[in-house]
Length: 402
Image (cartoon, rainbow, N blue to C red):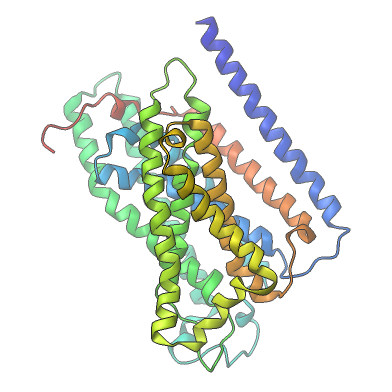
């Protein structure tokens, strides 16, 4: 008992240290950055970090929905904390979008100019201030509202598990969550499709007389978040797997690494699918947005993204030694998350600046760290209120009817 209390106290102190360091970096970076010359769009890096954190955090509940649909028993220890991570970012997502919509004039420049060349046909009726606000706001509220109903079913079941609940009641809730899972995934795809259009695709100026309209790009956008968010889940067994009552084992790490390996290959497919359409369809209006990321000043960022999201994880995960090691998997997950962040960076920043440098925006990096710190703090607060494990699901064995 004393050993367990000491372990919990050590984790609490470690978490406080991490949050304090992030907060210190967040407060000091803007002081330094305010004296530096800044190139590029206003708050561009902060917007990129917002998009990255929102997408990765939303994947928590999406991961649970996918695993419940395919009846992945190994994933049960991840469920509750993944769901809480999604709900922890909900207020940041909605308030953050409203702030960007209200104050960011440069990102949505087509709202404040007569850029007739940028708008044509049905695109002109779509790109309006009211349309931008309502489609994204309603999609965010719809996703988080449905997610909260989904998460609360499990939390409520845990609260009644010690009194009136039995296996039949657990199976009923399990079935309800199974039926809700496709709607969670659909809401996530719809929400992130709107974000992909408005925060990345529609900000690209028209070229060759046509607006850049890619049906493949939104899939690449939201799947990149699924990829990074799934990889980030390795933090759970890394932080919680050492306690005596932890349900995490080498099997959980190995299964998650197998899933991440498959997602690595899918990410590359969805990314290169954009180039297939451009090449075989001979669509010159779609060349420039993609070429701008690959060549010139941003070539180094591009290859950092490719290395972080594909070469490093694929090379590591084909070896069983890395698959079974929580430490090595954490490094792989960090590589994927850095690559995914750079991917979002290349979607936004090159549109506005030909030679932007990340280190010229230390104030925005500091604000990004503050956002991350606040998000982690809310997650930590939720773990003090709710269990970090879905205990009623862990107590259920495989369903004999499936």
